[in-house]
Structures are given as structure tokens and as C-alpha cells.
Image 1 (tube, helix red, strand yellow):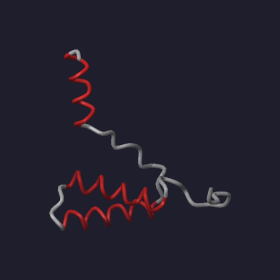
Image 2 (spheres, rainbow, N blue to C red):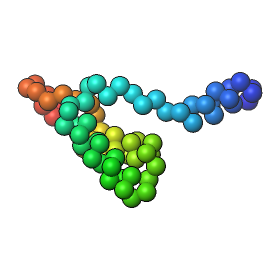
Image 3 (cartoon, rainbow, N blue to C red):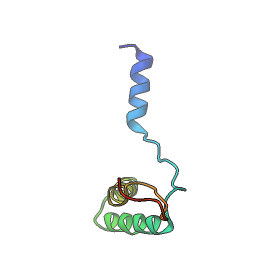
Image 4 (cartoon, one colour):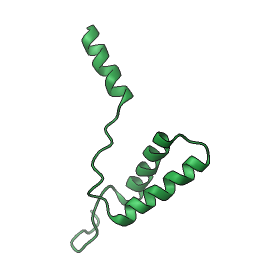
Length: 74
């Protein structure tokens, strides 16, 4: 494997894009903040707590969806 490719792969492993949170509802953002604080209280680092919190919100709600009519279950 070339040195440039190895560097590129290592760089991707170190940094995961945080993504745009604008599509989340205010309630989802509050839930993520509350979950994050709970993890930090248990001694988890801030970055890891944030990742876990958003993963939990995504699992519960299926991602950053706005509530409203016409959003039936598939």
C-alpha cells in the first residue's frame, strides 16, 4: 500500500465528520444534551459522550427527522 494511501486511511480513522445537526428537532437536541451529560458524569470523555448521545438519539428516532403529518412508518 502506498504511503499516501496509508496516511489517508489513518486520517479518516482519526476524524469522523460530526455532521449537520440542523435537521434535528429541538427535542432531539435536548435529549442528546441530557444523554451526553449523563455519560460525562460516568467519566466518559466529552467527545465520546457526544458521539454516544447522538447515536442513541438516532437509534430512538431514526435520525434527524422533523415531526409532522405524512411521516408514517415504513
